[in-house]
Image: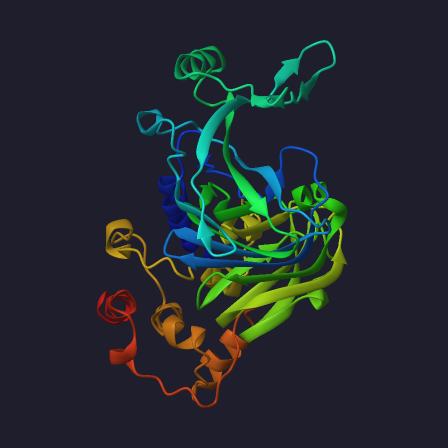
Length: 387
């Protein structure tokens, strides 16, 4: 029976992936000084909220100018192109980043976009060499023709150039409030339902090489699970769950990572005098790949967990030769209620969901099908009527 779940989910996941096994969009980054600066980052609050298939990023900064005069500073925001490259028709805007906005002390700034070389591959050294894109007071910007030639030379599966959003900002003596917001599409691959990278270490390029007071807030939506790679923290205990959820340690590609299961709300991380040594990487593995290894036995609870959120039309994939037992059908039908913490009167159902990593009982939750989203109602009706 378990093999039927594996086959169907493998078909589903394979249909989502592109020929190159994924699409990777622009990488989020800090605002960084392109020229020398005495200005430091006293405070930063980074908020990441998932809205559908894109992320809203909101960064609040308090910069400190220690001098007794206003300083004009050239500031940049670096972003990589999509992989494989898409959207040349949208040149020069980054096609998967929208609503880029920067306010300094309440005043919205205008910006320009430069396309710059992200380096070259040194065959003798067998490594990628990064090249400076700003020197002698100007960008080493590529023209549209040069970008097109780079794509033609390296192919559409390469990263021939980067985007640099840049603007001039005036920092008054003392504290300056900067608000930076934008949205961009989430990356995905055959083994990741979504992937969100954000460069934290660039903050060390400001004076002092640290963030005085740093807070990171992440909300990937209700009834969601995701992993955070421990590159700048030790383990899940360094995070606070702001809502209803729990964390567990899982192994992803041979590395231990905390996996957060949130029924409602998000997580947050805070640190004083923060000197990040790694970047923020949030992902949701296609769970079927993490529990299925080339035909090895799959635990039923994990397979059902892998179907969380996949409200697909199973009637397209199911044929007469693929049948589910009554017990399996009951499990699938009751998933939406289990995700909300429903405490089942049926002892076998309750025991089953308690064996999953994500179930969080809520004795106050009353199952009400009409209160569910339409896609979840359709899911229940399908598993109620298919047989």
